[in-house]
Length: 236
Image (cartoon, rainbow, N blue to C red):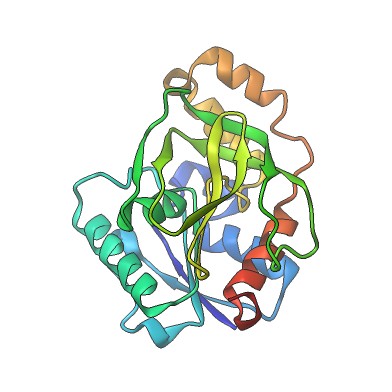
């Protein structure tokens, strides 16, 4: 199965030696669970998008340093592309920025959270079980790195998971579009490097607390299997 990965950012040069760029991170994460998945990369942040929705069986969207409400041509183009996916019933899974874009493009709203940053390993409580959540799990520990959050859902949305700091940690629109706020593709070392680099933006107290948990055990392999199931014909 071909899955198109829309790259909404690139890892800073000073961090590439940790886990590579986003294509390497996503490949290592997804293909660890299913080596048969072929990821096709589209450099969306530089204006490169699929020529056809039929190029891939489904699409995923990465995180980004940008906000979905930033006034940039490629972000407007991504919104239009997301709407096209919805209209065509094409399977989609958005990660962090992609999760927020799913809401923003389809009539919801994303804003900076009153909570502040969500960082390090945090727990997601699964509040709606779905058939593609195989193997099943009632909660997940995943890496987070975000300041924006979905504050209003589009029509036909269902909240699937929530965290203490993030009421909409995962949601589904219709039967074909999925959003996950966390970063299951992040390694602990990369997450730690970002926290240390952003300590003055995030706040020293929050970063120090986050560093205590950044190497906790995480459940990204469950999420990879769930996303593959969701994007496959059986999942939709």
